[in-house]
Every structure is written in C-alpha cells, then in structure tokens.
Length: 560
Image (tube, rainbow, N blue to C red):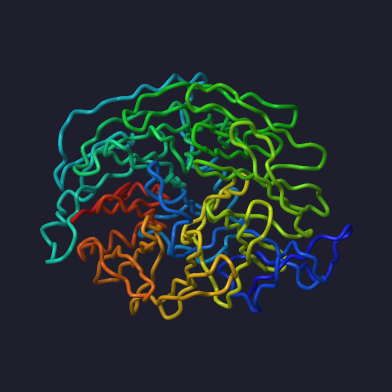
C-alpha cells in the first residue's frame, strides 16, 4: 500500500533513501499523513512529489472544475486491453494496470486514443459533413449498420425501456448504437454539448451530432483516418481540433489535424503536423486545446496552431536529455510537464502562455524517481505525482509554481483514469472534482460502499465526507456554479443509477432517478462518461469491446 509523502526540496545530489515519494497510485492507501510543502527546505524524510498516478486510478467524486460549455463529460478513458464478448469486465480499481502485459494487444487494436481505421487509401480525402434525414427515432428504431453515422434508436429491437418505467423514474429519451469496431475493441473519447442544443460523440472513424432532446441526427462527419484524440475543451463558438492518422505498422501515426464546427459538423482546415527534427515522432503524442490554441505534444517537440485558421503559432523543442510529458489546459491557462535525465530522471512543472509558448513560471524539480502523472484540475491547479517503484503518491495544490498544500488522508482514493499509450494523458482522469476551497476525492469501496471526501485546498486536511447509499458506490461529476457537487450513484441489480447533488450535510439529493429497466445496460457500460446538462443525463462507454455477437450502445440519454 502506498501513502502520500512530501518531496523535499531537491539538493544538488538528491538523497537516495528507499525511493521516497509522495505520488504513487491514488488507489493505494496512504499509511502516513503528508509532510509539508514538497518543495520547501526540509530534512530528507520520505520525499514526496506533487502529481498523479501514471496508470489509471478509478473512482472519485467530482470533476476537476465546473463543466465548460464545450464538454459534457470526462476525458476519454481506455481499457488496457481488448475485451471479450458479453459484459465488459468490471472497471479496474486504482492504477493496477499491467502495461507490459497489454501493450502488444493495445498497439495492435488502438494506436493513439482510439482504435485505428483500417483501409488502404494512401491519400486520405478531406472529410465532408454529411446531413441525414430529419427523422425522430422511436425507442425501437434500427440505426446505423457500423459506420458510426447512424441515427439514435434502441440496440434491442424488441426493447422499450419506457414501457417498464416506474413512477418517479426518468424517461429514456433516446439511445445510439455503437459502430462496428475491430475485434480488439476501441476507446471512445468524451463528448461535447453545444450552444445550439446538440450532443456530439466521436467514435472510431466518425463524429456525429445529435439533438439532445430527441436524438435526431443533426449531422455526421466521416474521418479520413483513425481518430487519435479529442481535446477536453472547445472554443466559445463550439469549434475543436481533432487529431487523426494513418495505420502504419499497426500503430496510428497521429500527425494530421482537422478543425470541426460542433454545431454544424462542417470541416474547416486540415493539415499535417510537420516534424521538428530528426527524432520527432508522432507515434506517441497528445492534443491539448486552450481557447483558440491547439497544441500537439510529442516526446521532443510541441507545436501550437490557431484553432481559427490553422496557422502555426509556436514550436517548443526539448534539449539534451529532456523530453516532454505533456500539456494540460483549460480555456485560460496551460501547464507543461518536462522530464530531464535518464538514469536520474527528474520532473518539473511549468506554466506556459498558450498563445506564445513562453514560460510563465516553473516549479522546483521533483526528486529522482518521482513522476508528475496527472492534472486533476486546472483551476485550482491540482497535480498528482507518484513514485512507481515505491508505490507512493502525492496530490498537491499549486499557486503557479508554489505548492499551496498537499492532501493528507489515510484513505485509499480511486480516481478513474484512462490507460493511454500517448505520453502521460495528463487530463485523462475522472472521479476528482475541485473548486477553489475544496477538492473532492472518491475513496476505494469497502463492502460495496465508498465515500466522497472533501479536502481543504488551503491545508490539505479533510473538511468533511459523505458515505454512499447502502450497497452502492458514488462518483463525483461536477461542481455547479453555486458550489454544490453533482454526483452519480451507481446502479444495483434492481435499481437504476441516480444523479443528485451532495451538500455540506453529506446527504445525496435526487435530481434524476434512472429507471430500473436500464440498470443492466448501465452496468455493462465500461467506465462510463456521465454528463449532466439541462436536466438530462447522458451515459456513454469509454470503450467498445468489438464483440460482433452482441450489439453495443454508444450513448444512452435520459430526461425527466
């Protein structure tokens, strides 16, 4: 079991007691409280770091900040290997992923964030937005046949969930069948809601916009290559940049960008990202968007483009033994993780200006062995670090480059993070929410119950906690403008899930009770993305298993 520790300020030659560190996997219980500021002068006692789990921890209760207009869920999540037929495996708890054991299977099936498109076309054609007929789907309508461009409907032709609805339960507004994907499975990026009332989902080789109330398909756009990444943020006018690429040696080279208007499906500019040096490679890359700037990060280079017109804004390259761990951003700010050295690699966090790439501030370097692994929130800036060898972890709140506080808990916490082969997936975690005064963390279940713990961002100490209902677990979704936390109570065998708010008294207050008739469907969705917007709840799996013997859902939408 791991425990949070505080990394001491690095001496010129960092001490080498048993691989000290504060940020092992968040799913592992800290055995001791965290020390003081990991960057402050302190004796070499169990140094910690300030980061996040490199491998997906699971569970948690809050999105890292109030949802933006551009997104309706969490960052995309990925299962560390292909799944078989039938019900997908239970979500993994904590960062207990065995990367080496699954890497071959994932590379063959995924390549980037999403499974790759097949096809032989050496010269991808520019995608064209395709409009479908304006027909409202019925609960049992048949839909797409595997291209990902179909209308909403129900995956079971003889199933009408609303016919079984009980008093007080939500309605199933519509469902969307999943596209056919390779037998190894495919990851599904998070979705978006738009200012004109659409829900937008990308999966495998297509992006589709649906009317959020009726499920009517508003537009569909086929991609010219395998989808690699979708940013967390859209611009204020609902535009995003997607990355895609061609399958090369069973790996997706994610070196192409495409601007897409989420309101209309219209494709804007497209371009290939140029290599920046002999060692530049797109086999491991990430895409981050901050307002009107999209940044493609690789190990040795980061290239920024204007979302509006595709103009290259800046290029940042590493030098010597340094390499990038990735960028994280919201609409107003951006941070960068850099690692320098090989035998004694040391991580550092920097704030950068999204428009210019200029460094604004930097933290002190972490002791060797510590790794900055995830960014749970940008505002406040909450960072998770880990020491993989010693299984230790640390969560710290930053004021620019200075540590404000570090989480001091004895609980095992389980944020849910995506497995990714593209750099570190800095913003790939859910199950954590934050506002300026509190961080909300989900604990590891015991006897099929867990708790949501609110941690004071000034002190790192527990402020309060709330237990989940008997026999069920709770997951945080978002912090509303009034400061209330929205949570999702997972379904049981005879009850549907529930979305509600959690006040200071720790009692969940129901906003929408999902029907018992769909509880089995809910439980089959792998690590679902859960969106709550305008009184509607949207559930979407973070991975499709590629089983040809069973039809899968891409999206399930409920309303009052």
